[in-house]
Length: 451
Image (tube, rainbow, N blue to C red):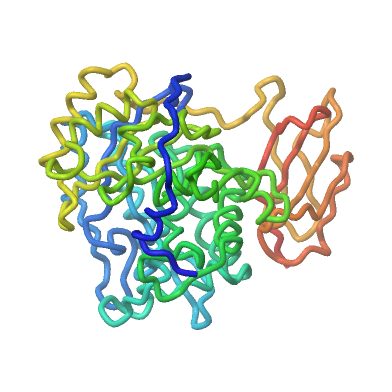
């Protein structure tokens, strides 16, 4: 069944009562922040990073330097950047649609963006994919512009993306001080069978999209401490409180879709608001507590214009007063009629001036090890053809070793640190975790098996 925006509006019947409660903030480098942000979201759609197979490399360092300078001047502490978008430039695909890696310009471009953002005290929220990946724009933007629905529906292709693109990205930026987190996909609901309303060429079942999101979230959580989120169409898909449709992205839903992987969860919800939405799901009228959400909620998109339902000043102020984790008006790019930087910058600066202690960001060291009661240790050799050893296997507490594959299945489990043999494993990427007797995570590491 396909639901249009008009049909979605008809599902909602009443406004829940407002409830006040604890402030929702996002913690980065051990400090709590209100996200006073802006959507870039791109200078050139899908081609800011990496190399287009026809158009070449389009990264513009001067444009990004000017952008981050403007952010700093007007009190913006976070920018939302789209990375793959519809897949037109990155990642790299083979002839069957499997992901085989990232091109030579990818990290050079993204490294420079992170450096420029850090120099101007700006965090980045990296939005990896958009529902545009399931549209067809190949006629206008090249052979890889969309039609990547099989990355969602075919688990082997999902794994190829995780192994050959996502893990290298997470590895590289696992300790990047100004990385707020990873957003798996923008507005996936528009490409799901039961809610499709954006004219995508392809679609998936809800369970397939939950698996796509959950497997990536699990991989990120297994090898880094960075937060994971998803850019949802709106509050209607993030709550079990009527008249909401459901919480598609709950811990339980993502864990079930990944065969019980406990690392398949979001750290915070991200919802979007547009003028066509009913008042029931207007975050500038309804507080975050009204929906009984179990995580902080970031307003990741809202119009950056003053001629709609609300002014930008009202939306920025009420996002703070209604206890959301922050707001990111759409957009600095400002070429789609939904607003622009000129309307957003002064309200964002005013918010910063009122709450500088919760907004001003600067990098400082992060901690890699989750339990500082023990000395850090590592495994070797890595990559390995079979045997795995620890640099110091002598610990006073009982330990358990778990090795899982990319889908979260535990393929090795032992309490003997001195006898780990994975020579029978298939070649590929695995995740090794060390837990204590109370199942606290002491250490996690990516493990590469070679032949």
